[in-house]
Structures are given as structure tokens and as C-alpha cells.
Image 1: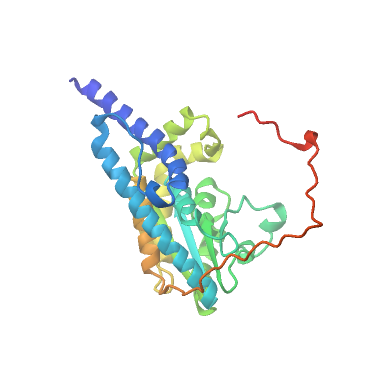
Image 2: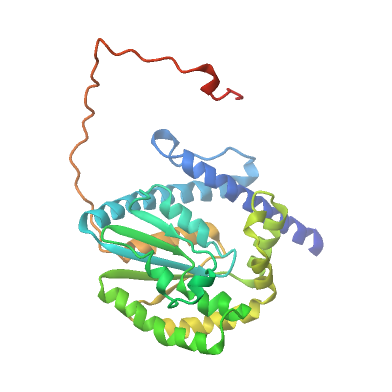
Length: 307
């Protein structure tokens, strides 16, 4: 096989993997209980090793999600306050791990904050003000899909803040995070790290997938061109905001599935949760009344059975 043929074969394999990863998102929702747990799709024998790894991935994911449910119960029971920041380059996999964390949790306990660009009014506020409104009360978990570190990343690289704004941010953010910790908030910060080549590959996959093209904004495309500027910004951010009270954790994320499992396992190791005992649930008998008559639903209100 020529070098070109080998390269094309490797590209095909990776594209197939991306498509399969999208399919796995649906499988993760379906393979929940009983005999289905850990099941997998039957494909050609050539993919036996990949199927074995997928089965192992599902098994570990379900186990970790079970632990996340215990963590959620403990947070609600103890009125713990937990904040987790997810940062990284575009297409680094932040959304994927957030989806797996929240997949089986109660949105009243665990919620995601993904703020859009600030409004004209918000631009005149104290920089951290709009983020403070999303911080948790007791018994809540908040996942920030990007956070106040936008200033050290996209705002810096794209020129949305000046040097004075940036320097004030770097002076303020350690004090801000120390205040959060002193107030009883447990703050965990993750940076998802991918290679130059991997980001290019993921962007190219998105350009070809109609279901994922919405993920590519003009800002994302510009970030691709400015890879080196983002690298410098990341390095400065990590150097100046890695503090004992709220340190950074780097997640190697070229392999999406490994990154998800590793991040969730690490998150669980950072919180001193315990399993909360719950009383057995007993389903009450439904009451029946002789004078109860269910009224027919008008036909025009019924959704047509197209399937």
C-alpha cells in the first residue's frame, strides 16, 4: 500500500470513528438497564477490537454515571456547593463531557451555564457580575461551559478587551476565586487539551456533517487561523491563574472517549461524597371511584400517527 493510500485509509478510519461517536451518543441513552447494559452494535469482524473498546467504554461510562448520581444525592443532602469550569479550544470536547455528566442527573440539582456574548449593558458591569448570578446555592452543581476565562482567551485573542482590561482580569481572578472558595464553593477548573492536527480534523468533520455545522461559528473558524495566538493566551492564563485554592487540571482530549472517562473519574475523586441511604419507595394503590368517567379526547387534538 502506498503512503497516499495508507493516509486515505487512516482518514477514512477516523471519519468512521467520528460517525460512530455520534451514534454512541444515542446508544448511551438507550443502553440503560438490565440486559442492554454494555451491549453494542454488531458490525463486521474487522471491527472486533473497536467493538471491545466500545463495550468497555460503555461499561465504564455507566459505572461512573452511577457514581455521579450518588454525588448528586450527597450534594443535595449536604447542601454542598460545587462549580466546575470547562475550558479549552473550540472542538476540544468540552460539550461532550458535560453532556455525559448531566445525562442522568436532575437538572434542578445539576445545571449548565453557557453564557453568550455580553450585552451592551453587561459590558459596562463589573466583569464577573454576570457570572456571579449563575453560581450555585447550597445543594447545587453548576457546570460552566466556558466561563470568566473568556477574557483570557477569546477576548484577548480577538481584541475584545484591551491590555488594561486583561491585566486587571489577571489581578482580580485569583482574588475572586479565593472569595468563592472562602464562601464555601468548591471550584474545579478543567482545560481540555487537543493537538493542532486533531482540531483541524474535527473542524473538517463538522464542515461535512449537516447535523454539526451549527457548531462552527465565524469565531470558531477564525480561532483555527489563530492557533498560535490561542496557545500563547492559554499559557499565560495557566501561569497566572493556577492557584492552590483553585488549581487547573489538564485533560488530554485527543481521544474523546478516554477524555470523558478520565475527566469524570477525576471529578469524582475531588469531592468527598458518600452514598446517601434512601427509604424504600413503595408505590401507593391507585384510588378508584365509581363516579369517575374519563372523557373522550377530540380527534382533532390527536397527533397523527405518521410512524
